[in-house]
Each structure stands twice: as structure tokens, then as C-alpha cells.
Amino acid sequence: MTNNKITIAIDGFSSTGKSTVAKQLAKELSYVYVDTGAMYRAITLYAMRKGYIKSDSFDVPGLIKDLPSLNLKFVFDESLGYAAIYLNEENVEDEVRTLEVSQYVSRVAAISEVREKLVAQQQEMGLEKGVVMDGRDIGTVVFPNAELKIFMTATAEERAGRRYKEMKEQGQDVNYEEVLKNVTDRDHLDTTREDSPLVKAEDAIEIDNSALNIEEQFQKILQLSQDTIAAQKI
Ligand code: DC
Image (cartoon, rainbow, N blue to C red; front, side, top):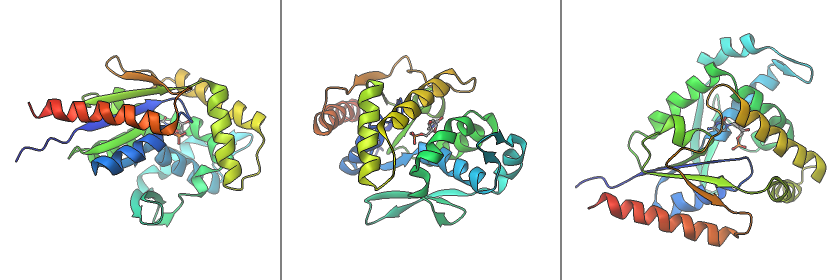
């Protein structure tokens, strides 16, 4: 039997709801979901714990030296309904979501050696297809031949509002202004970095979800996925 599974790449600005729709899609299609942002976040957490990143300094060579010994993996978590990120055998799924990690992660993601390691691992995870991967460079660098590429956008205010609500619900002590600043700072760093900046792949389908609710967005992308899968069978 031929394998009709496809690779679905979902890229876009931070807090556009990429992971929400990617998880829904993976579940519906029985595909594997890979949150590549969690991998950059786990390396950032490691650098913070080791003292390589401090508020006023960043020992980049120190972090690069440790990269070969860092082990990242995803382990399916029944209660979450998706895979949690593990750093050297420790479940760090919650810890990588803090505002502190968010504040440093773009700097870590700008390091070419970090990207090289993570892109190689991501490509390996997608070898068999049947994956929904979300990030910033999935359609441009990780899987330039992905059968379906989605590029998600929404206004910075809309994204900060959603993120703020989510963090409050998780019990984090944040205010809207600092979340908005984090969103716009990350947009700037992610789009202007030299290595693999966030850009829309030429063949990606852009979806501005400022005015879409989660269900409408899911249905729209599910339809695109099913059409693409059906086209593979011809
Ligand atoms: O999707 P996220 O907010 O969890 O991503 C965290 C950071 O990691 C984001 O600011 C940019 C970076 N990132 C990246 O450079 N490439 C990816 N494929 C995924 C994330």
C-alpha cells in the first residue's frame, strides 16, 4: 500500500495559535505533532540553569560546547493528549513556558550551532511523513518540500491578549504590557536574525486568524489538509 501521508508545516509569528491548530490537526489525522519551539525553549532553559544566560550577559561559546551532550525528546503524555518535551530525561514541558524563558529564547534560536542540531533532529522525526510540525522555519528550511505549508499571522495586540489570558489561567504573575512587549520584541528578533529568519515560504498559504475563532481556523486548515492528502492519491 502506498503511504499517502503528507508533511504539514505550520509557521508564523509567536502566539498566533500555531500549536493549538497543529495539535488539533495531528489528532484528527492521527499524525505526529512536533512543537519545535519547545526544543528551542528547552535549550534556553538549560542555558539559564547553567548560568550561561544572565540578565546582562550570555556565554554563547559555553552553551555551544555543551550542545553535543544535550538530549531532547518528546514523550506522549496521556493527560495532556500530546507529547511533552524532555531535556536530558527530565520533563520540562511546564518550565519551558515561563515568560523568563520566552524573554531569552529568541537569542538562543539565533545561534547557528543550536539551529543545526535542532533542524537535523526535526528532519529525522519527519522522515516517515505523517507529521504536523510548527515553528518558524519549517516550510523554508526543515521541510522545504512539505506538501502543505501554512503561514499564520494575527495582529500583535490580538496575540498578546491571547497569550496574556493563557498565562493568567496557568497562574503566572504577568501584566498585559510586558506580554505585548515580549511579543513585539520576539517578532523583531525572529524576523531580523541572520540564520533562518521567520519569512513566509513562497508556496505557503497565509492565514490571518485575527478574526477567526479556534474552530473556524481548525476547519479551514483541516480542509486544506484533506484536499492536499486527497491530491496525493491521484
Ligand atoms: O513557538 P514558540 O513561541 O514556542 O517559539 C519559541 C522561540 O523559538 C521563538 O521566539 C523563535 C524560536 N523558534 C525558531 O527560531 N524556530 C523554530 N522552528 C521554532 C521556534
